[in-house]
Amino acid sequence: MRNYPAANNNKNQADPIKMAKKYLEPAWAKKFWILLITMAVAAFWFVFYSMFMERLPEYTTSAIIKFEDPQYNRSSAVIDFAQEQVYSKIAILQTKSFLESVVDSLHLNIVLGSPEIDRFALFRKIDIGEGAQYGGYELKNAGNRIEVYYTNGKDEVKNQKLITFSLEKGDSTNIEFNGLHFELGNAVLRQFKDIRFWHVSKRGALGGLRK
Image (tube, rainbow, N blue to C red):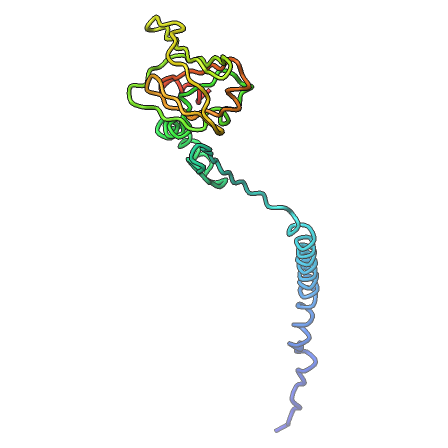
């Protein structure tokens, strides 16, 4: 029997490592560029965020509504709210109950008719009693004495003289008429010859507050 030499298949068989390298090298090259681009974009975004985004100001809004009542040297009403609560708080500010509390606290139903007069310098203290009469009032300076006149068109009362009073010693004078009690600043009473104001209903005061 003749012995034939074994066939050398190493030359005919493809090397698996070389084949893998042959097919993977292009894919790896593409993947490398994709990875490189991704890293470059990430680095650019990091630099941009560090240099610019963190320096951008953050705007927030807050508000404090504070009504000072100098008569009692205290705050009558304080409301504090942030930006996200604005719309709900605006609704609260427009409610009748809140506006009524403002009118009562600041006595806005006493309407001063002379804009050049400092309201709080004149009215140091206001006390509105039950049954206080609505209408117009006039303080006329007659030297060291003040005459008070009352007008009410509804009751057809015009320039009715109520009282005459003298200024008390010190900075203020206390007077009372038609259910109204005032502590008035003497400096304002001496400075102005004629001071007009009105006592209106709470409804009338609310109407003026909403305008």
